[in-house]
Length: 225
Image 1 (tube, rainbow, N blue to C red):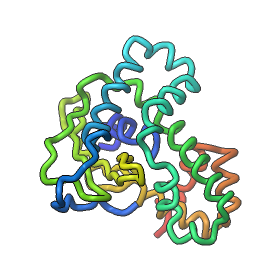
Image 2 (cartoon, helix red, strand yellow; image 1 turned 45 degrees about the vertical axis):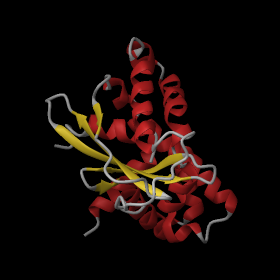
Image 3 (cartoon, rainbow, N blue to C red; image 1 turned 30 degrees about the vertical axis):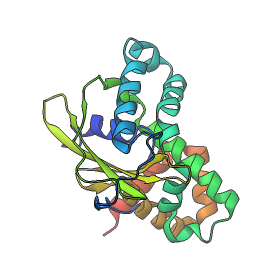
Image 4 (cartoon, rainbow, N blue to C red; image 1 turned 45 degrees about the horizontal axis):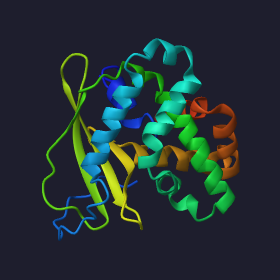
């Protein structure tokens, strides 16, 4: 099952990267018409990703840094990296200095992208189906629900949690795959690691070891009774 979900995970978390999904609470439809809706943002990402990969798979497979740059270009403008990082740090965000929070955000993002980048090479246009939006946009937060088609034809439910910025634009900050919030998942791992080695050492590990640091955290967390 985990192997079949690898593509879905890569598509959902090729970038990136909270709390569980927020309910879509009815609210007055006063959205800024000049800004794309969350559903339009997700569709734009899916379309841009397909365009960037189609015809370039062999080249991108040989050049991971170029693949990472594609991910940055497609995802970063639509992802609230700072907010997601604070949520991953949880209670430890208050004890971290501004410089540490900035370093963590960058190192965590880089680790995530390198971990899932190669899986995106299997992405083809049409794999992501954005489900019809029901209800009005919440004033500040909402969820876009999608389905990803796997190689065997089965569907995986993926939800994207969004929040509205001060200038009215919507950015994603969490991905929920089959009901599992990945930011919450990493928050638990980060919390355990900080309690073990401290926040400065965790940041250093992410900066120097990248995705290997994530793998170590996941293993340590899994091995706990």
